[in-house]
Image 1 (cartoon, rainbow, N blue to C red):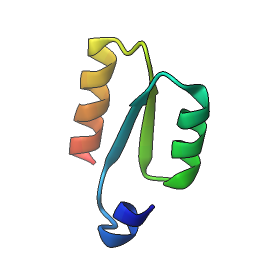
Image 2: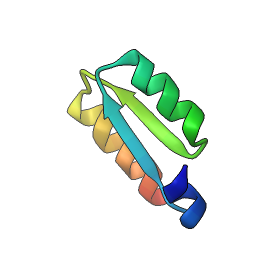
Image 3: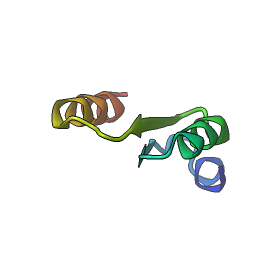
Length: 54
């Protein structure tokens, strides 16, 4: 939340293997994207491309 408040356009991605962390991260910052492990390389690349294009 602090990083998003300091830089409103900041894109944030969390990659986690813990569901509780994923829920907390998504609630903490609406512009944050949360990917849960295992993450397939193609899914990661697609999400990074979406974030960069936004």
